Length: 227
Image (cartoon, rainbow, N blue to C red; front, side, top):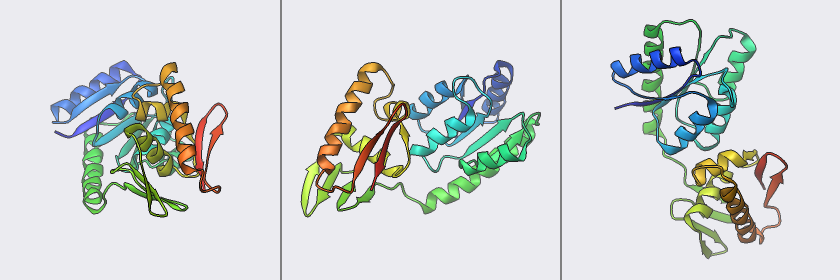
């Protein structure tokens, strides 16, 4: 069954959409704010996301930006009460596949998500998930958890590999602490945050042979892999 993540803070609309999509044959997981949606996203695989733009704790645009840090492919449809051109453009720049302005009919939403899913399934057949990266003089195989330089291999742990993969997928871009913690550790507790700092130190040690490679701290934000 096709699985949809629906993030909508209006309880009446959220429940109505969830029930309608379920009746139409889609397993629909409802999140009531952006933070809850991100947590649910990293816990399971989804075929499509529907994000309301104006939500508490984390708006739909911020949510989509964080989702795209680790997942470039899962389709996203935005729902918004705004009809401003600038908002629409921002949504598409963040990787949206479609954009619907409230109020809308259930039938139109269904038709649009079916069209987006058809396009997505075609692209999925053409692309495989990237697991090999080149970081200056290093070759990194995320699937095998191996970092190689000058023929010398370094075996990484599961978390070391997952964290480095996340940084590689967003090379030159900031990765927020909260997002990295939820993606690699499952939640962003204080204990896990301290653990992640240790893993960042380990990755810096592995990469120190190449002085042009840096994992920089972004104060109050997170980290960035720079080459």
